[in-house]
Structure formats: C-alpha cells, structure tokens
Image (cartoon, rainbow, N blue to C red; front, side, top):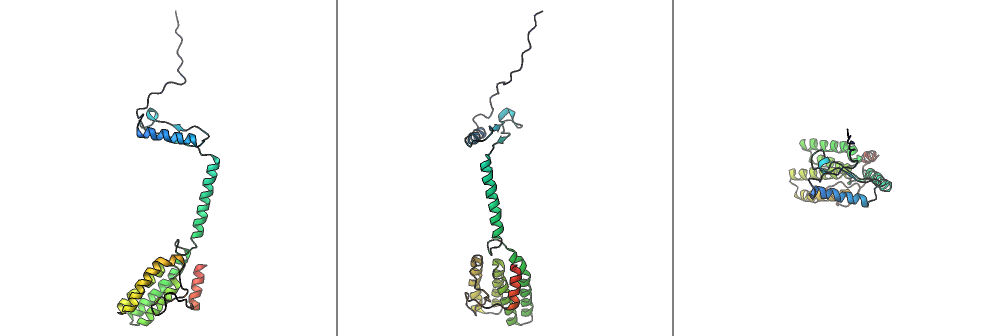
Amino acid sequence: MHLVPERQPDANPPRRPCRLAGSARCRRARRMATVGAAAGSSRPVDIACGNRARDAGDVKELRLDVSPFVQAIDRRAKKNFRRTLTRSTHLTGVIVSRFHDRIRPAVEAELDVARRAEQRGDADEAFACLERAHVLGQPSTRLHTRVHWFMLRWAMRQRDGGEAVGQIFRIAAAAMKTAFGWLPHGNTGGTKVGAFRPMPVAPELQRLIDAARG
C-alpha cells in the first residue's frame, strides 16, 4: 500500500488580502507604521489589520516603541510643568491662590457688617466697612472686583452719581489689572481718594493680610 506523506502546514501561510486595502483607515495605519520605522523604534510596529481584527477590517493594535532618550525628555518636561504649576499657585491673579481662601472669611465678615450698618441707616459706617473689605481683598481679583461691585450698589442706593461712575471704572480696572499686581497698597477703593494712591494699612488689617499670605 502506497502511503502519502502528510503535508506539513506552511509556517508562513499566505495572508488573505485585506478587505479594507486602499481605505482611509488602512492608509492611516501604513503612514503610522512608516513614521514609527523612521523614528528608529527598537521593535517593528505591530499592526493587526483586516481579517485578523476583532471587528472585521478594523485596526486592532498599533504599538510604537519610543527610544529611552525621548522618554527621558518627556519625563523631564512633565516634571518641569508640575514644578511651574506649583510655583504659579503663589502668584496673585494667575491661579486662585491660597491667599484668596484664607482672606475670604475676613472680607465676607466686613461685607456683612456693612450690610447690617446700611440696614440701620448708617451709610457712612457701611461704606467704611466696604473700604476695610477693599484693603483686605485687594490682592485677589475676585474679591477685589466684588468689593467694588458692593461699593457701586451702595452708591446707587445713596444716589451718589459721582461715586457710582467712579466705581464703574474701578470694577473694570480691578478685573483687568489685579492679576498683574498693579495695586496701590492700602488704597481704600472709594472715589474720594486717588485710584493709584498708596495708603497706610491699619495694623489689625495688616495682621490679617500677613496671616493669609502665610
């Protein structure tokens, strides 16, 4: 009896043509493979495409190996970015700083006292409290702008046109210039004093400011 030797399977069987050959997805995969080869990756790009994909015709995997030199540069860039971000938290107006969170309770307390004083009919005492709130919250863009908004509302209720017009300009200036540190130290924020005139700070307010800056 003549025995026919069993045919061994081919170690490298011919691949069936990709059903998406010529498609945009297949061309994109080839371009990425070319880029990976040009980048000098340590291993060949492994791409499973077409009939080997889990979903027929989809690119299943694309693995590009980056050289250790590029990885080291990437780690150094991320480290420098985190360090810069941490330092920037201490810059007033760039990122909401810890100063804002620490000084806010004192500013809110002055605003509450001003509200109660105006309800009692003591407009002068109310505005004096708003001036104290302005001195405390001046380095914070949000608090600075908010205090000027309260001053504008006070001027409108008191029918003080000159104060109201001055506060409109000061609201715009507080919103745009506080972040750059263009602040007259100790300025009380009213129109009776120059907008750029530095003024001495009361000792109790200075202690609150120093504690908030930590």
